[in-house]
Length: 432
Image 1 (spheres, one colour):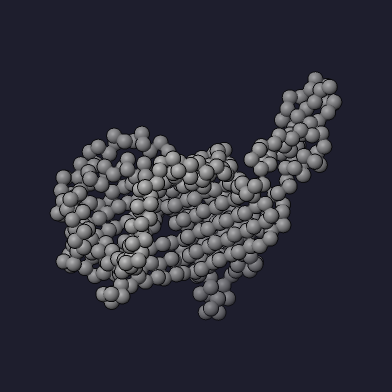
Image 2: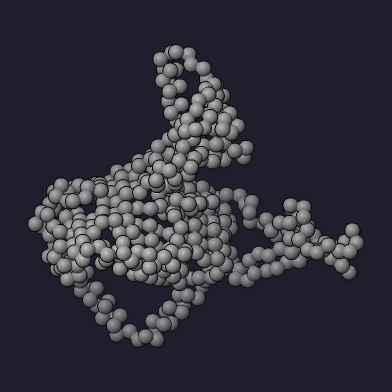
C-alpha cells in the first residue's frame, strides 16, 4: 500500500505536497488536517476529501450573528478646571482628509499612494470648478503631475483611471474614528482605526502650545507611501470549547508621536485631576483597611491565587505590537509662579532647579509572539514587562540630553545601535 499525502490547502491549489510515487497513478490519497479542539490539537488523516475540507473550513464561513460599525468624522473634547474656571487642554480627533481608493474586482477598496491621491484630488477639484462655472469641460483629462502621466475619465461611475494604471477609483472622506465588530458562533473580528489625535495646551503661560501630536513622515517618504492612521488595530479570535480562545491574528500599529511638556501644563493637569481623585474620609479608611489585610496575608495564599489565575490559558497564533517611536521635549521651569510644591520638589531632587531638553528620541522595540499560550494575566504581565524594560533601558537619553550637562547624547548615540535590531519605522508597518 503506497499513499501520497496532501494537505487541504495544497489540494485546493491542485499541487500535492508529498513525494511522488514511482508509478504515475498512486494507490491512494490521504489528506491531513490540523485544527484545535478545546485545549488539544488534532491531526486528522482521511481519504475523504469532503470530510477533510469540512473539518478545515467548518468555522471559516459561519453566518454572522451581529455586526457593529461606528464611524465619527471629528471629535473635540475640552478639559476644564471648574475650581479655577479655566480651560486646561483641548483634545481633538480629526479626519485625515480626502483619500482616493482603487476599486478591486472583489469590491474591496485599496488606498492609493499619497502622491497619486493628491494629484487626483487637484485634478478633480479643478474639473468640478469648471463644471460649476458651466464651462462644459471634457470629462476625460490627461495631465502630467510629479513626473507621472495621469489620465482619468470622470464620465464613468465610479471614475475610470487610465494612466498610470487602468482601474476604477473612488473618492472618499475618511473619518477620524472607525470601529467595527463582527461575531459568529465561533469567531470574533475587531478592527479599530484612529486617524489623527492632537492635544493642545490652553494655558497661555506655558512654553509649548501643543502637548501631543502625530509626527508626519518626511515628504520624500510620504509621496510613495499609503497614508497611515495614528493607531490601527485588527484582532481575529476563535472561540473553542471550555471558554478557551484562539487568537488567530492580533496586530496593533502605532505611528511616530511628539510629546512636549512644560511645568505649567503639568501643574494644570494635576490641579484638575486632584479635585476628581481626592478620596473621602470613608474611602480613605476603607483603603487603609484593605492595605492592612494585604500586608497580613500570607505569601502562600498569594501564590495560590496567581496559580489559579494562570490556570486557563489561551492559544496565540500571532501577536504583534508595533514599535513605539516618541520624540520627547520638556521644560520644567514654571513661568506662572503657581507650581505644585510636590512636583517642584520631585523635579528639584531628580533634575535640579532648572531642567530642559529637546527632541529626545525613544525607540521601543516591537513585541512579537507566535504559536504560544498565555493566560490573560500572564499576557498583560508580559506586555507590561516588555515596555517597562524597553523604557527603562532608554532613560539615559533623558539625563544625557539635559542642557545643564551639555547634552552629550550626540557623542555616544552610536554605542547602542545593537538595541535597535527589533525596531523598524512605524510608517513601514502594515495591518491585514
